[in-house]
Amino acid sequence: MNILLAPMEGLLDCSLRDALTRVGGVSRCVSEFIRITDTLLPERAFKRIVPELNHGGRTPAGVPVRAQLLGSDVACMADNAAKLAGLGPEGIDLNFGCPAKVVNRHGGGAALLQTPELIHDIVLAVRRAVPAHVPVSAKMRLGFHDDSLAETCAQAIEAGGASELVVHARTRADGYRPPAYWDRIADIRQAVRLPVVANGEIWTVSDARRCLRESGCTDLMLGRGIVADPGLALAIRAQALALPGDAPLNDQPAVPWGEVVPLLQLYWQLVLPRVVPKHRAGRIKQWLNYLRRTYPEAEAAYMDCRTLRDSRDMQVWLQGLGGLDGLGTAEHPAQLA
Image (cartoon, rainbow, N blue to C red):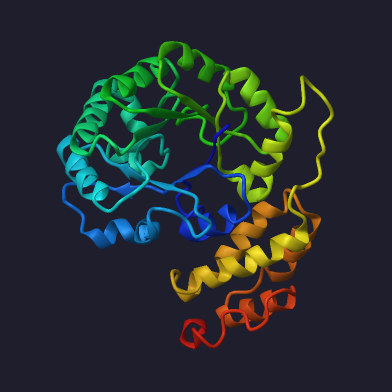
């Protein structure tokens, strides 16, 4: 069973990838998108989003990272994919699912689900532009306004030469509102022969079990669920497949709060050099806001730090949680200014 870590713009970046993959259970990551317009990006632009390219395309825990491209210009996507392939990613993923209005206005992300022919041309051009040993995959939603073209888009991706397809089981119009329509992933699986990975609204082991059953998939991609419960991938591996039918589940987090605290502190160290001072504290609060779905202690922690704005105040508060001594101090004194 493969469990993938989802790309999430503005949340699941390289810093959170690093922290979450140290927990275990994740087979592969997909980066947040690299936006392609009408230019050939410099090497630094790829490495800014995917710094793992400096380390063999893997997180410090050794989990491979597939770099994701987003754009609608066929030739430019191919040219940038070729350059990216030279930097040694685990593979290249293509974004046909982003629901953001600013992306869709420019014809990217989920907007492409209205034009299966263009999707095919993009996949085909990228596949031809990169060496055969570099996997090319794609991520899509069920559609833009509705899901009437879901199977057609999936077939276009397959015909273009993609080796894997992740399906987020909602349309762009659905946004992130529950439910996710996992049964429609089963329909897509019947329409294509390439491996299909199920994604969307998987918060618990129970969700994972139902998703696997309804979609017919053997592989999952986790996004907000694993941000809220860092041990979710481990729990799914231990229970979703091992227990038959509707056998009782152990609903205790696989990672206790005492082990989440050092992850938060590690995340802070990773955030310091990458995020401007005024946004650093917000990153910690953003993660805590998800964690409080799983941990009562996170609820208390969030309420305790929610008014903090200054990096130095957040530093002191994080040290007060216990764990690491001298957190982020001597080596980066200027970063806390």
